[in-house]
Amino acid sequence: MEDLRLGVVGLGLRAALADAGHRPGKGSAVVAVADTDPEVRAGVPERFAGARTVDDHRRLLEDDSVDAIVVATPDDTHEALACEALEAGKPVYVEKPLGITVEQCDTILRTARRTGTRLYVGHNMRHMGVVRQMRDIIARGYIGEPKTVWVRHFVAYGGDYYFKDWHADRRRTTGLLLQKAAHDIDVVHWLAGGYTTRVNALGDLMLYGDLPRREPDTPRPDGWLKEFDWPPASRRDLHHVVDVEDVSVMNMRLDNGVIAAYQQCHFSPDYYRNYTVIGTEGRLENFGDGPGCEVRVWNTGPTDYRADADAVFRVPESTGSHGGSDVRIMQEFCRFAREGGATDTSPVAARMSVAAGVLATRSLREGGMPYDVPALDPDLAAYFAAGQQRNHARS
Image (cartoon, rainbow, N blue to C red; front, top):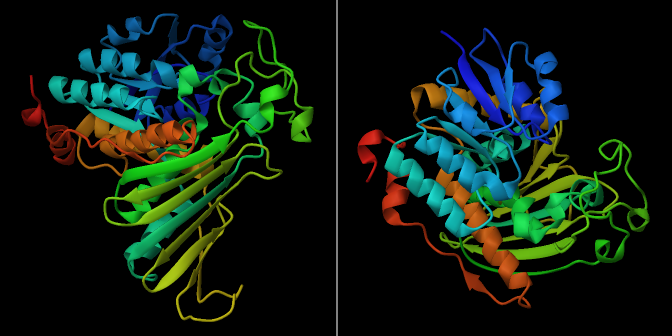
């Protein structure tokens, strides 16, 4: 089997994704990279032997030696780049989120259906060991039918990762309740077996709004990915635009009746995701969220709190970025681009996580007003449910 030849658009913060897809002789290889940064382009030949570099992504779309496209650029560019790749007939991977508005997501889905080109969205948390372990525990009936899901997300590095570049500008992200939470909202949907239909939220820019910022068009400081400031209020060199929230709390009602909650803070001392799922016959909770962590189950109550759970499941060790999930998600994309078929990720699910995040962000900026999440066009939902078969494409 010849390698699937990948063209990567954007080799920035998600460069590890391209690394995971570069397996020459084992199914896929990065053969071309488009990036506007000349320093990034200069490093490509050493990183991906023999790969070509261009400063205009359209040259990849016109190149017959590129089989599929990986879009890993800032969020506000996803709609245009994904649609161009789909129009060119090249299977496309879009890094999450699918878009920064509901309308952008729906445009991408409509373009995929009209062209019949395969679309894949990179919600890599579906391939993380801890998430798969929790889903397996639920599927095996250990806690009965899920009724409520709670997520607490402590983002220790938030001030450095999300407030020193474009992430801090709502024009490019809508907000971190979409950009950062899209993964977790998707996991809530996956674990609970439904999509959000109604949301309300509260949030604020509590800490980073008044800290010193860089002048426009000045680069991030050297070492910003390795040297983290503490305490949070000592941070300097923030992006010149900071108008997204650093604390948010979101409530969700799903279409199957499940009620869920998500909380996010960008100035906590530790980085950690904590999931709790309570069903009709028990509760599960993760302790740690990386390889080798545990998922514990309590299902013989009622009792006082017991640290010694009724069942403990250890998440298998794995290697590679994002706990090995980047390798697994790129393998799934390459197989899908080549053969089609079912995947654990879903463009419809990606759209629904964005839609929930968009409406929650509107809610928190309007004092917690509840909003209904707009439903997806049933024809689009049916097309993707059928596996994106070309005979379902519409003109």
